[in-house]
Length: 432
Image 1 (cartoon, rainbow, N blue to C red):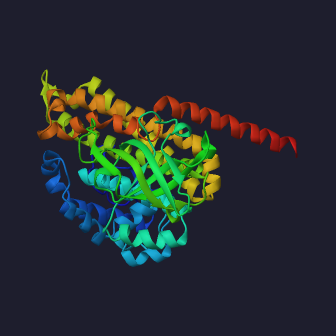
Image 2 (tube, rainbow, N blue to C red):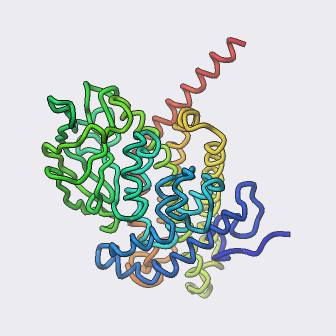
Image 3 (tube, rainbow, N blue to C red):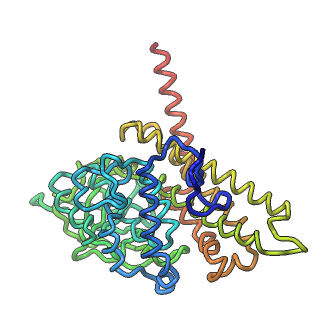
């Protein structure tokens, strides 16, 4: 016997396990987290989304509410929460021992469904992992209490005006002072999400020669010589996309993440989670759009019958539904594999696959956004009313396609990684 459905009962508007169908991946703790996040978003976020979009910002007080609710800890951690972080609180009463990659998926699925709140956390979800995985204990003990309590915020600063997906060729420099106690940072970063309101910038810098071997990761506090200005982007102002300039910024050497020359590898490990997380967002965006399109198709009449009674419209829904659920299944498979691999093996075996998953997420978004907009007609072009969420989703599709690596680069990476694994497997077989 199946469980009762949760949330919308319209086709493909919720993940299959929300509908009550069995799944090998989700337990009571996942359902508890889902319920808690949805309830919190409906109380604190949903009533204010339009107001915040119009104002161009989410009030800073909301970030404090996020910390109080226990949202910041899991957002900073990803798929594994350190036991010592439990003191800051975890939404849904989930313990660090229970938390896994599927909790991370559920958390983001519900935050994206909740609306504009997700844009507040992008810096934290991509900026905190290098600190957690690679920084010294002393640096972690100083910074994490500040960012997990909501007192301060962090972002990731890798992309440059002339070095987007080509991370190996970034030009921002960090040179040691004569006494060896500080780095002096000079350069520029662009399209840095949440940079306008961040206190710390997890920054990829060049400490050595050319190429990947000369790149290091440095945590740079907002200080003299660090300037930020907004970069207007197609998805709107809530993500606080930023142009960052470093001009003789003085940073203590203790703020180096790990060792010099390890920054490229640290960035690549971080990219895998970022690409998976972009797919989480894409999936919920598709489900929200198809929900609203279905609601409209069930009541809108044209040529003497409702839209849903017309085969051409049902064809559109069928094609959207099969792609959305296929993307869900592939995403869950990769989460499961990551749960059962070490971080090193996950990066080695799934880096290319995760890149291709992110590409698929973008392609499905493009298709669903366009088909839903067509079904809505003029309402799909309108920023208010029944088509507002579809209009916003359609406008925001490039946010799922470009960040985390452009489509063409990711497809090439996926093929190169697949060939590399194939050759390794052939060599291993030959030794048997």
